[in-house]
Image (cartoon, rainbow, N blue to C red; front, side, top):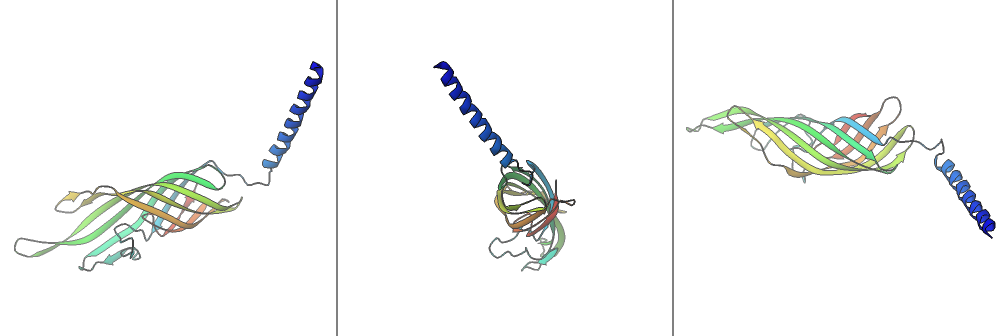
Length: 206
């Protein structure tokens, strides 16, 4: 009787082993594109929403400079972005990013006798985001994705010839409507979105 049960047990074990082996070969099909567990991105963005109205997007579209209603002239460069992504699956990734933006404005103040004085004010901004990315298409040549990030932005410092100041963090977000990352010899990435990192982003993926 014991030999009978032993044979049955061995038969079940062999069946499970054979089934698992076949499944493993199927899931590890060499034609299935592999993906990196960890990714690092370096990019620059233009038309960022720093110091802009999130509803009307004023001060966003002008690439390098714009003039306010009061006649003051603002200069703004694009953002520099560093990003890390952890690929939890072929579809979903989570990560974080940090962005830096610089702007300069031609400001005006009045002396005690009403005489206007024009001067430059320099501002430095840092943004921190927790990112979520969803891959729609992933193959050995490229992947197409969308995503969003939520986080905080701070005016790290604003300085001029009279004083220096900084502001507290405020809630911010970054949207990626569509992005494409090439995985061939040149790991280039392009994104179209909205936020402090820019409406358009271009960079490299490692």
